[in-house]
Amino acid sequence: MEQQYLTVTALTKYLKRKFDADPYLERVYLTGEISNFRLRPNAHQYFSLKDDGAKISAIMFKSAFQKLKFQPKEGMKVLVVGRVSLYENGGSYQIYVEHMEPDGVGALYQALAELREKLGKEGLFEGPKKILPRYPKRIAVVTSPSGAVIRDIITTVKRRYPIAQLVLFPTLVQGDQAADDIVRNIQRIEELGTFDTMIIGRGGGSIEDLWPFNEERVARAIYQAQTPIISSVGHETDVTIADMVADVRAATPTAAAELAVPVLNEELLKIRDRQTRLEQSFLYQLKQKSDRYQRLKNSYVFKQPDRLYEGQTIKLDRITQRLIQSMETIYHQKQRTAQEIIGQFRQQSPQSQIREGQQQLRFLNESLNNRMEQYMKDKQKQFVSAVQQLDLLSPLKIMGRGYSYTTKEQQVIKSVNELQPKEKIQIHYVDGVVDTVVEQILPAEEE
Image (tube, rainbow, N blue to C red; front, side, top):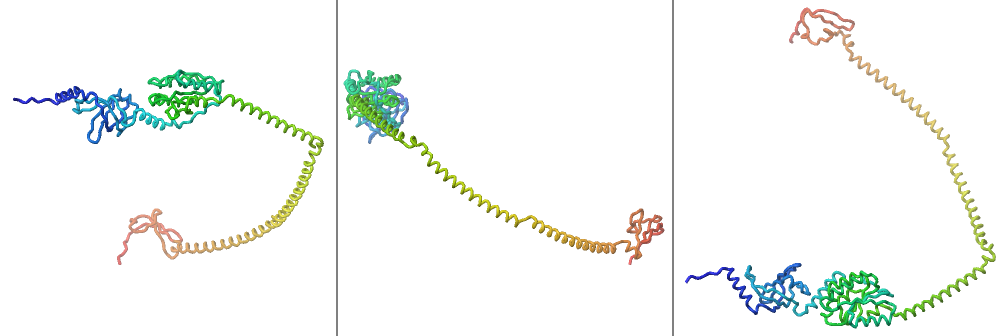
């Protein structure tokens, strides 16, 4: 019989139907360690779950991932609920995670720790805290209208400071919509801008009950508010993120009211005490001024005003005397300085300098004349010597010894080759010139 072969697609579809039809794989509770996790914002999340012996691929769709109250991290051990199916294109099976929470730690506690870490890094807990007004006129209370919190606050404020106005903003303090309601009322109070203090509170409960006060949007609304905020959430051992961001934390609603307002009777006693002290201080100052007035009134300045100028007159006389002495001293110093300068002028009289200059001028004139005479004598000797040398070199001197020279057309004849028969030439002697004609040219005889 011929064997029938399956395609890969057919086999994969068959296996997928097996996975989808298996009731044990429709809802699987799995524990493992997150691996290959990389956060994809606003998208599906792909990662793996592993233990010491195996690893499985996992996918968590965007809608399920947004419901998580904590941030998955690489290496975190988690508990997941989902279904196991086969991915046809890749031929690999994987778990589609529908719910996930940390293994060993509740999801709310994990989310709370992560949010604290995030807001702490941003500085919301360490930011500058606003100071509560000492005497508030209007106080806004954000809490449930039916709880014991508002009753405790009203009772405490009426007992301590009944002149303050309390305004309740009914707010959900538990449930999924509580966080939005809290944020909305905080923003309403800020928009009104007529309140001096804001109290946010609720009674005790589990972490789930108090969770709206651990929401990030509530923390940011408290941090951004300009009105000073007192937070009183839960019991004294319950510390929410709202408590950490608020300007002041109160352990109980009663303590929050006590922090918000002073005791009116005590303030009135302080006012009376300060009034008494002010009156006593005024009377003391008045007595001091009166005593001083009497002393001034009996002073010699008013009874004998002339005495007021005695000291100044004596001081003026002394200053005048010192001034005269100083002027005399300066005069004598200047006189001695003038005499010294006159003596120096006499020693450096221009007449003596003129005489010295005239003597030097005569000496220079004599020296110049002597040098000029000597210079002329030297030049005469040089002239006579040059005349004698020129005379020795004169052609007339040579022609006087019987020499002559011949010219033709005023050009000196240096060779017989320059002459032709019958040409006219001139023979120059020391005492005259002879015009003649060339009859014959005889070359020189060789020796």
